[in-house]
Length: 349
Image (cartoon, rainbow, N blue to C red; front, side, top):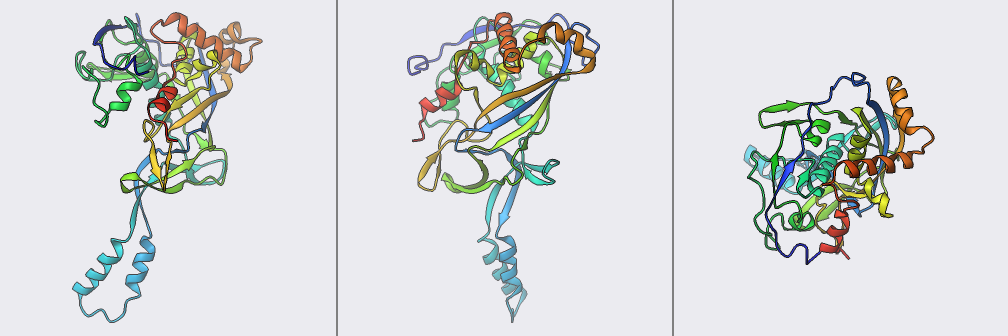
């Protein structure tokens, strides 16, 4: 790790494109299939935090109750002063993403599909490297956003640069539009727009009683995070994909690590690159394991699907699709382990 990331070497790479974009209308591509993946996600770090953008005010009702209970307030100014003193004691807490869980019938912490999709695409984009890659960086131009040297320790982005050090210094030039990854996950850049063929649904908690825990972190930051061991379940729908594209999706989920006997852990959510102090302990955030529990082809895809999938278990299909992707896309390193690098870079124990 230290030898690899002692310095960066700026290199050039070509982003492989496709001859034509695949139809977004399910069933229109007869040699491809549409399918639904049932996936589960388990939190394996100490905590996971995915913010909703909302800031809850813990203790607000209690503070207002104290103001209402005050008698003989002589003036408006005095009332405002008392109210201000009460409200300043209220602690802002960054809330976890929450939605109504149709399985438990109540509002609970959940993982938005957009967060998982972002993590999947980022892993494909950042893990790939070499002369030919499947994805460009989502920057405004071909020569911008590329690091020239490693940021000093303590400077913003220093961990990110060291974890993904083989790719962050690549100048990636587009060969043709769309790229392989763009054609699968969609794009809106370089004056072009293309919809996605992969749709990530919300992942709901399996435990109907799961709630987030309020934590006071370093830098006086308060968040409501879900603890280690929490399990979420949801669906991913892929439209008009072939085996190697399905394997590319599985690669983004970290499932190539199964080929090397490793746990398929990926990084997701806030504080995934660094330790956070909770009380007197340093804790990990943002490490999850995704498993594919079932693969269900659409009825009109049975013929094409059966040619490849008949007699195979879900795990065999996952492994076979990943192997096909590794053969088709040589820029993808087999079993690249960004979580192992992250933990080696900054152990929290």
